[in-house]
Length: 259
Image 1 (cartoon, helix red, strand yellow):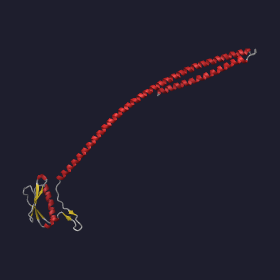
Image 2 (image 1 turned 180 degrees about the horizontal axis):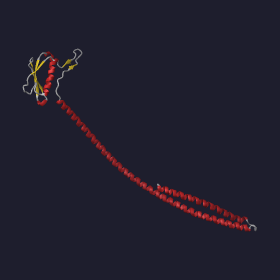
Image 3 (image 1 turned 135 degrees about the vertical axis):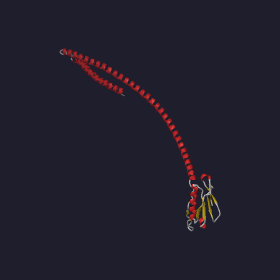
Image 4 (image 1 turned 90 degrees about the vertical axis):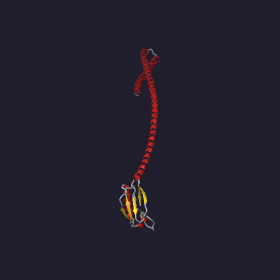
């Protein structure tokens, strides 16, 4: 762009000089006109013998003026021709330079287009790899989530299996006629029965016996503990009804029997 600006400035200067010499050419043409006019006047107007001397002077002066005008025209013609040649040369050089720059710009544009295509291909390749990695990570995340869910379910089942057994005292809302009932109503007819609890030395068995003793006491039963026999069972004996029931003990693979 700087070279083009300098070339345009040079052409403008040459055009200004050419304009000046064209004015000189016009002025020389006007001088030639006056010289020719003087020759015509001396030749055709001054015909008398009295004006013979003046005719010669006018003719000589017109010839000098004509020669000056012709010399000016010749000089202006040579100079304008030279300036025109320089302007054409500058224009030709500028055109060649512009063509060269346009060719370079075209080559650069082609190179940039190739680089753009290459970068686009690399971008699409990297984008495809990122999408593939994202899908792999999403699948791994789903697998990890499923595994965590299975582990949570297993842990909850393990916690449920290790949780101590309870025997709560519950009230149940009955119908409008019967009113509320409890889970010990079936024991109430045997109120006054004495239950003997024999408990092994095990934390779960003692916990279960405390729940059972509370339920029996709420039903009006009397409970007593007897010394441990050393067996891997917990016994409940009651005097009124000679029946027994075995209750499994989940800890250490043992069973608890209640009577």
